[in-house]
Amino acid sequence: MLDRTDLRLLDILQRDGRITNAELAERIGLSPAATSERFRRLVTQGYILGFAARLNPQKLGLGLLAFVEVLLDKTTPDAFARFAEAVTRAPEVLECHMVAGGFDYLVKARLADMAAYRRFLGEVLLSLPGVKETRTYAVMEEVKNDGPLRLL
Image 1 (cartoon, rainbow, N blue to C red):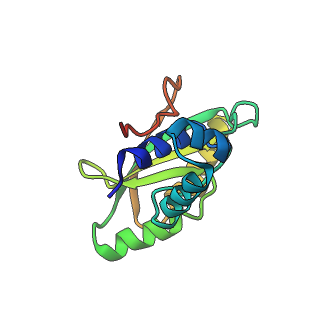
Image 2: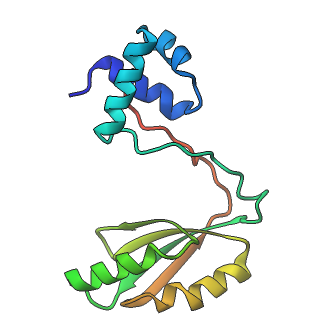
């Protein structure tokens, strides 16, 4: 079970992963040693999955964000496993989620432009095991893309 201090620590870290242990300790009202121990426990228990820098995709030439609905030709455990294993090897794919509803997977992909997306669709996505049909939604504007989890 997480207590209120654990939740406060997680909330602060998800908003500022570069905060020092001393600053974090001060903000949650514990000693640096106790804060460090809590942090290690939360990592070990899998509450903290890792840390990374958020990069500006436009500055890096990856201005197109697309969501793609993927419908498989079969909905068997083997078909799901083959698709899931293959899609993880596509570097353009940021996220892939199996969903309930009118299609099987929702893929989030980041590419340079529409021409790069067309190549990705033809050479990568449609060649993945079991793909029967896709529907693409190109993002016109990213309104919110950094939402922290609501913990408190």
